[in-house]
Amino acid sequence: MSCCASRGVLRSPDLQGDLPAGQGRPSAQVLACADATPPLMILFGGGASHTGTHDPAIPQDGEGVIGEYRLRPFSVDAHLVTNARFAAFVAETGYLTTSERVGHGLVFRHLLDRPGDLPPNHGPTPWWAAMDGACWHSPEGIGSTILERMDHPVTHVSWEDAKAFAKWAGGRLPTEAEWEHAARGGLADPRFPWGDQEPDDREFLPANLWQGPFPHANSRADGYAGTSPVASFPANGAGLFDMAGNVWEWTADPFRIRSGAAYAIHRNADAQRRGQRVMKGGSFLCHVSYCYRYRIAARSATEPDSGAANCGLRVFYDS
Image (cartoon, rainbow, N blue to C red; front, side):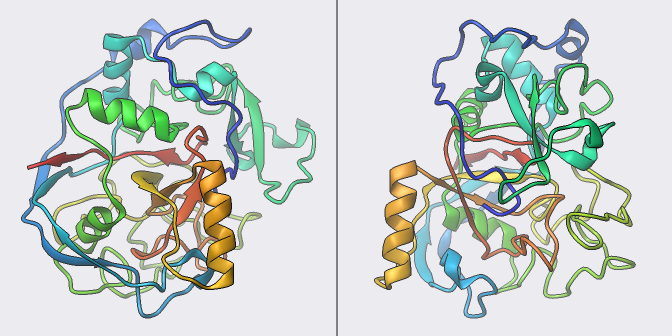
């Protein structure tokens, strides 16, 4: 993944256990704000649908391969899982996320108070910093809190965490085909959940995305440097919020490019070796000039134990 962390550090399927030194549990104040109330669910009747596009922007991701599907009826939460709802899950189950077990998480450097004090990251994604204690309840690391962000989407969620939450909520993660069908919101084949108009960084700001040259200067024309409260931007035609931007959304599907081309064979072997899963929707770090993956057909591959400050989830349900 270009905007997200590309590799996880530890697989952690257990619900409970010991925390690394320095890693705190969610505060009593955070747990007191827990709210298990599910959002409005939107019903889709199923039927013929597809994945992919005839106009791929990043063909190496396999988005130009068209897949035809027959979907069963399903329902989906109108908005992303919030910190408040995830807190209710943790309060009831005692669940420890992957980031909590590892003891650190990846944070976008410009969200930190003093990014210049951090050691440089000379890797392919130097805008990320591994911060001790960074996890769902302390998204910027030790000393940070979500108390003023309970209505924001939960972050630092791995695929394993997302799957556990969805099961607790009585649902599941979507297939990629279900996700794209829901994101189109009744439109035939739009580029984005709102249609085909490209965000312009100034006046047309339909989603929580990056504005300006990435990663050096975000004008914050949409009002946000990081996550935004769920449903801050207009819904798509079906009534779903944040199907583009804000945070990435996990799907159930293993990453695979349905092609016999040499590049696809190599990419598929690597994805299978890493156990990568498909993520959709992009995040607040996406821009047309870099990580142009807030388009409906766009896709990314991430390890199941990997979570970062722009990784969240949405729950789907069988109907």
